[in-house]
Length: 108
View (cartoon, rainbow, N blue to C red):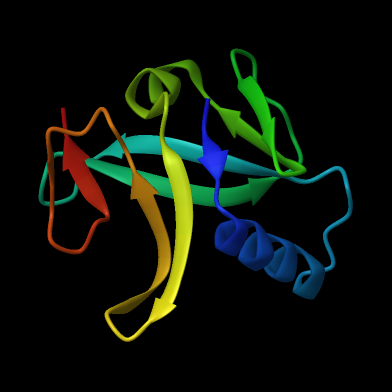
């Protein structure tokens, strides 16, 4: 399961509203090979389910993960930062043994 902080929920709601997305859209979180640490995070909106998707809901946000990504992201918290040290979504992943400096990739 992935959890979402209050700041991340606010930003997700804002992005969905600005883009005119209706309730059929959900947040798709995935992991792909690449990045300086070997695996990189991918975050997008979608409204089509794929076979094998795992769905979770936290703070009213519906989240989809494919089975491979679920294995890497179970227990992850999605946060949003708008501070001086960087702006954007952050993944607090307990499965990551190493993360790159920018926080966009990791290894297990």
